[in-house]
Image: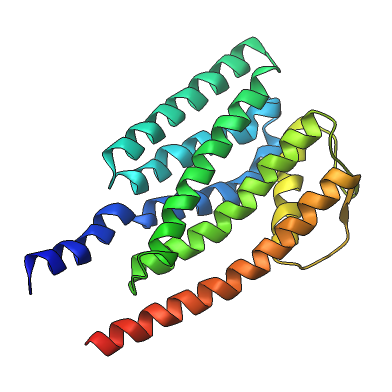
Length: 228
């Protein structure tokens, strides 16, 4: 095999990273999230603290690129400092800053995983895990967006949803994934034009992603088999 071909084949591996860390962090976050309802002493920062732990685990999936890895570490440290300051000082104005940093980290991780799946077209286990990560990250990204909109009064929700700070985010995560999967239970509904717009955009993107993901992975697998 020519050196140029070898470099082309190895470069996706270097750029993609190991998404098992990211997937493990996402699963841990989603499974532990309901338990934050009982953490009254953490209040509105319960989810931020949990997401900080996820970022600490997930950042190792970005280690293939030194520049991106450093940015990820910086975001982890920034969210950790903001969370600690908010817990000990009770400064509620820090929550939007922490949410914005979490949103940046989630979008960055999502783009890197999506590049590995849809641009590099690699037919391996890491790409499959990366595809799962993209889907889970999309649900969390929309949940953070809904929380930011709710904080500034641009979106509200009706139905079986609480306004208590430590329980609100788990409800929004639940609503986000139900919308992403187009289940449509109807127990929580968006109120207002902005919330409804974000909700139907999430539903459409969720369905399009599943179709494109399956087509991309199948195409990569067929291409890999034909080269063998």
